[in-house]
Image 1 (spheres, rainbow, N blue to C red):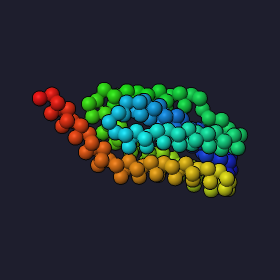
Image 2: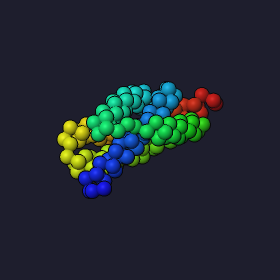
Image 3: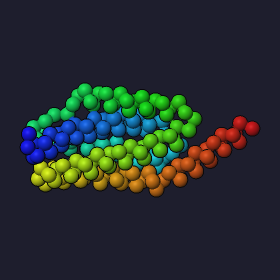
Image 4: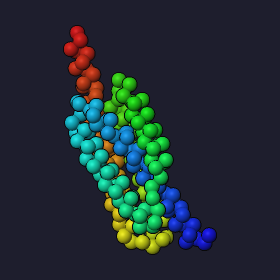
Length: 171
């Protein structure tokens, strides 16, 4: 296998991993958004990102088809199940919104790293159209990470205020 073949092989594997990663993201965000009642800004942003993620999966499917590959149903299933378990583990916590916010922030950065790696590989296989699609996804992930970064304080303050309000109501 020459260097070009090796880059294409690593790229194909990375795309399959990214596809499964995005399926995992959906399995995390979809239950989260259903349980967010007191944080309308967070809910709206997660709903927007769910839509973006669905578009990202579509782009990954198009890229995989272009290089004559398909996503891995097994990887998609395993990571989706893992994402569902992670979402359930946070649901049992009293501070679910904080745990979800922290986990989402970390997950966004994981996705950012994955797409930066894929962009490097797409440059090596010299396909500008693929790079454009991957850059679009990277931009969306970076915007989501930045939004979470900019709003961690607000979510934390809202959480504390809600807790204080609940305590006052119990008295």
